[in-house]
Image (cartoon, rainbow, N blue to C red; front, top):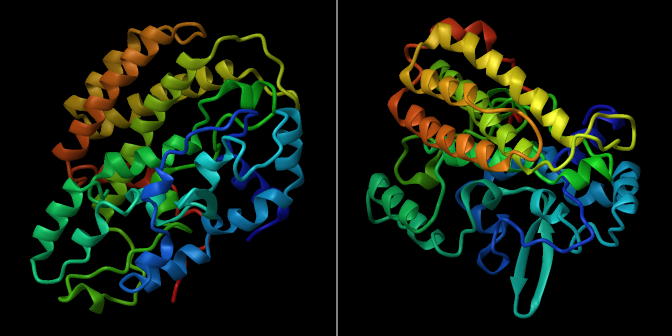
Length: 335
């Protein structure tokens, strides 16, 4: 951990608090918990335990800033009666009781495991067969770049304007970059082609240059999609959030505008049909509050094009953007 201010900010940029209880992204009845992954993924679990995704489970309730936001939003319990559970905690239901069991963990990114864990653990079939049946059962593999990245942006770009306008919460993680974070503190890349899988490696390997390029591009495109959705959800540009920041809708619109410029510059280097089409889509929209129908329709088109980009390219032709990719964010876990 770095200094207390940075810790508080990173934890809070994902916290979504509200006076009304919110259904979490993961179905608590389908959550198995990180311990269900430990037998085969012990090193990955060690890396997770060294991260702020893990730490938020213990630190959020003691954060002065979190409690300040909670007070402004009239939230009594950050771990249950609030939208904080959506991004800061994993809930599990046992019998009639539902409770927070961890911070952001394996299932936050790969999906609640009850429906797919048995398929994923089968050893008497090939790895490709196991992957195929696990994905059909609901598991999200790292190769599905859009699905993995979507889970990041569901939290790193805030979508509830009350949280910002009334609670003073940051509208997005200002320093969040998909490639930089997945190659930094969040990196947990130990798997090899060893058979059986339980004999996987002990080195937390870096992603290839090609994958880092794809992660960077995907991060830019998803940022644009999610920023447009956020502007679409905004109902006012006149709010004055605590702390002096601009209204939620204004912040998100400025972000979307900046991303459009960034992506246009990147496309001069990568020059793909999908990114060109995305820029044409965003050129047609007006970045203003109370414009949900147009902005959501544009975001939906961008989503389709971004998925197509993910499966149509492997990063091998994008070397020209290497100098634009941020360095790994945070301290990488080294066994």
